Structures are given as C-alpha cells and as structure tokens.
Picture 1 (cartoon, rainbow, N blue to C red):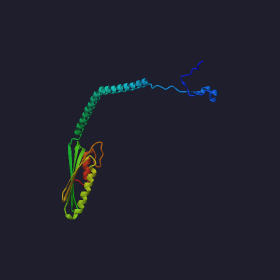
Picture 2 (picture 1 turned 60 degrees about the vertical axis):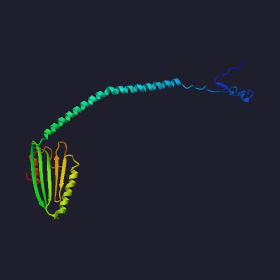
Picture 3 (picture 1 turned 45 degrees about the vertical axis):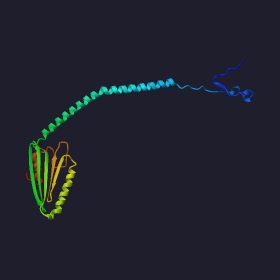
Length: 219
C-alpha cells in the first residue's frame, strides 16, 4: 500500500537506509508553512472607509461654515452697533460733564539773580469742579552774567517736560529764544486716573483757588 504524505510536509531526504531514518522515520520530512496571500480586498475596503469618512468630515465642515457664518456676521454687526451706541452715549455724557462753565486765572512774577520768572495758571471748571488747567511759565534772562543759570533752568524744564510727556494727561509745548524760554503744560484731570499734581479731578473751585494762593499766585 502506497504511503500518503501530508501536503504540508516535503520530503528532503531520500536515503532510506540511513540510521537516522530508522531511528526517526519522520526526520526525512520537514514542515513548510504554506505562503500567506496578501488580503487585497480587506486593505482596499479599509482605504475606501478612510476616504469616505474624510469626505464626510470635509462636507460637514463646509456645511457648518455656510450655516453659521451669516449668523456670526449678524451678531458681530449687532455687537458693533451696540458698542458704537455705548461709546457715543458715553462720549456725550463725558462732553456734557466736562463742559467748561468757570475759569480761574492766577499769576505770579519774581526776579532773582537777573532772571525773571512769570507764571500764569489757568484752571477750568465744570459747575465749580476742576476739569483741566494750564501752567504757562516764562523765564527771561535780564543779564548775560546769569546765562549759565538761565541755561540750567531751561535744561531742567525740558527734562521735566520729557518725563511728563509719557503720560497722556499732559499736553506740553515750549518756545526757546536767545534770552527767553516759555513752556506750557496743559493738564486734563480724569475721574479714574491719578496723576502727579497737587490738584485733583472734581476738586472744588474754592479749594483750587486757595492752593494757588498758598503757592504765591494772585487770583
């Protein structure tokens, strides 16, 4: 009777008389695993699913943009209109509250070491409450012997003005001549912003006047 071999075994030894064959008859056969086929259909199916999901995602993104962009634009326009209305209303209220109704002018003049220093302080009020002021200082050189001191005064005031210019509450202008230097410092007082001054926002007319008199000014 002929021997039937398993298809997964391949005979590799033909010497049937060998001692090793007698000891282990199966040694002449070696197991070879059949080659695996590449699952082309499964891979193609996975790729198709990925592409489909991607296209669906892109489609919903486009729909989402088209659906919500007009609403967002309308909301943005409404918000802008509301903000504009609030800003306009606030500006009107501020302009109304900051309208100047009274003005106080105080002056002083001194001569020292051949230098004449004139100061004019103009304070502005709304219903007797301080809103702004302007300090105009003019230094005149009366004699060339005080030229160095005059230059030192000018340099100091210019440096001081540069320091003040960092704050938006101040408006500073100056004028220089050979023998005269003038500097104007305009200060705007606001409710929520404290600045370096001995005067404050909403300060009473009489209080401001008294302080200026104590500084040596005539009002």
